[in-house]
Length: 393
Image 1 (spheres, rainbow, N blue to C red):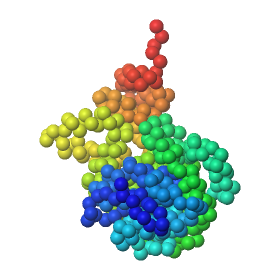
Image 2 (image 1 turned 45 degrees about the horizontal axis):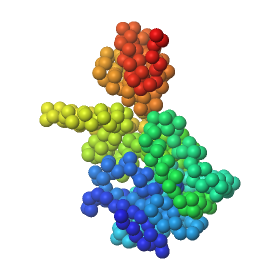
Image 3 (image 1 turned 90 degrees about the vertical axis):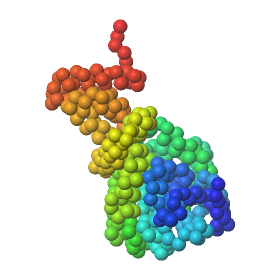
Image 4 (image 1 turned 135 degrees about the vertical axis):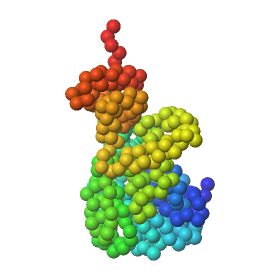
């Protein structure tokens, strides 16, 4: 377990990937650890040497007495790069990590090739807002903050459809040392980089979440407007967009870092991740086992292009894509695929009521016989999932 002693504290970090690949440095948000980047790692490692670390006050890094400043967090990042003898990196930070990235881009642009600022702000909230959160933390600990934080970090739809992911993020948040959280919260409370970031002259991508309750998208648009030539992407997600829209986030990140166009290996890994999220691990594992020399290229093409590209385009969320897919499969009378995507639609937050309305609509435009068989399929799947009461005796 590697640690670096920098600025009189120990920083926990992990560095993985081909030693000859370009280095991408990832910086975590307030209340998480380096594990917050888990959804992106398999794709990123196809092309980058990835450096992740726990910001001071988080995870397994030290928790020196606070309060901290954004400058301190930036200097920790620089010292870690010096320790690892890495003269220049790509940098991606989310929320507080993005605030660190803005400081680096303003004060030490010579250490960065490209800058990615995700779900972040150059100035955030009022002193009263932060003082209120600090008061809750002092009184109730991390458990007192966690429910409201998670509601800002994720949409209700994601919370319903991804209980395992929610449990992982909740554990990170609850495991954050209260003293570290408070010291970093004060750093954010005291920060205002709005004027300074106008000096950034680096290729910059700004990613925002349309439903972000912590750093609303207008704050991301403000950053993009202040940094000359910055690219702006808005995802159908809340604050932790790299979890809620993991595939679309990864595509946007890697497309930017590659100057447009995702490498085939990265596209496959991203597609596989999305395919698993929608269709489930069990089905995808079986599909991979059934690959032969005859169908392998076809299976890989579907994973790369259908799941790695189209399902991750930013224009429609997965919920909407599921509804469209189900409707088209009803029209085409492809019941094997329909059965699969009816189950997948539930993973994407589609409700039984929405399925019923879709099938009623399909009865008009695709024909009653198609709707009859589709209603039977949907009823069987909903009953198996415990979402449909059995018929009265």
